[in-house]
Amino acid sequence: PMEVRRFLVWLRQQGKVRNALLRECLGEVLGTFIFMMFGCAALAQVKTSRGSKGQYLSANMAFSVGHFSHLCCLLPHSGAHMNPAVSLSCCVLGRLAWSKLLPYCLAQVIGAFLAAGLVFLMYHDAIMSYSGGVLTVYGPNETASIFATYPVEFLSLGSSFLDQVVGTGMVLLCFLPLDDQQNSPAPPDLVPPLAATVLLGVSMSMSYNCGGGINPARDFGPRLFTFMAGWGSDVFTCYNYWFWVPIAAPMLGAVIGSYIYLIFIQWHLPDPDTDTCANALNILPKENLSPCPPCSTNLT
Image 1 (cartoon, rainbow, N blue to C red):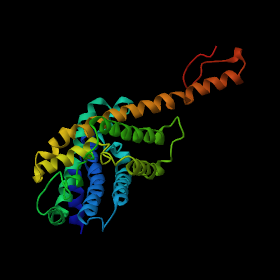
Image 2: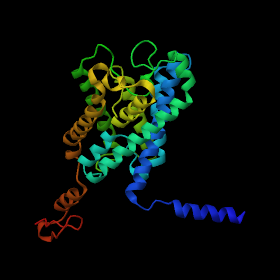
Image 3: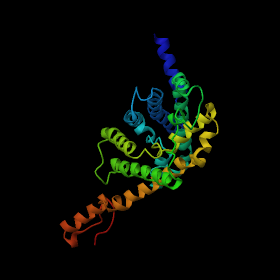
Image 4: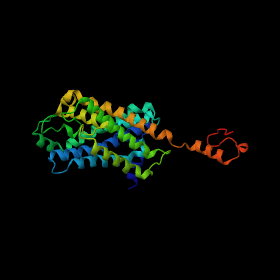
């Protein structure tokens, strides 16, 4: 009916967000929500079924599918960071304004928090049956690890910090070449599957020690939810207040991984403007050289 169509047009006009930063933050909320819905739901299914409805690999693959899906949905919109460590890296590299870092991080935490809440509602009965109605962080029937990450019991604080630094650094080191125009960037349509494959590889090889957090929002948002939903303060105090490691270490790892890529690869790639000038030096007689149009550098 025409009236319904007019109403939908009016609703779209009234609901359209005109503030660019707010639009980007809404995208980060949704993107992180999508990513965490796939991942936490898979972890809940694997754990509460005691491995009969999934395996360790299926949880890693679910996170990768979530990463692929959110990239397809939001890559042109906000950059689809989904990770405060990625946002920090973009600020350090000049790809994101520093004024956007805190709003992006808050949006990502909110998205992860909302996803954890919805997964808890979906799997509430299964979680209660598995845990005997006792929501704990420790023991054979713990369920807190469905949502946030925790270290294995024998791991030292230094080793866990290193684990998160290295894992996040590897992610950024492999992500950055995908859209580096000075390198050999991947075709835009291949960026989501390639990025998801990188995440799958890191998850399958570097998640035993600490659960493969490598994302402060992925860890802190669900951890905050479990604190409020019945697991209590143990989610923050357990393992000698370990909760700060998957927040601080990935931020450091992202910066280190980014600078490793710059120092070893990006700084040594040909500069298109410089190459144009260099080619002119080889082709044109010196007396005929004029200012080079692309960089306006006099070659004489």
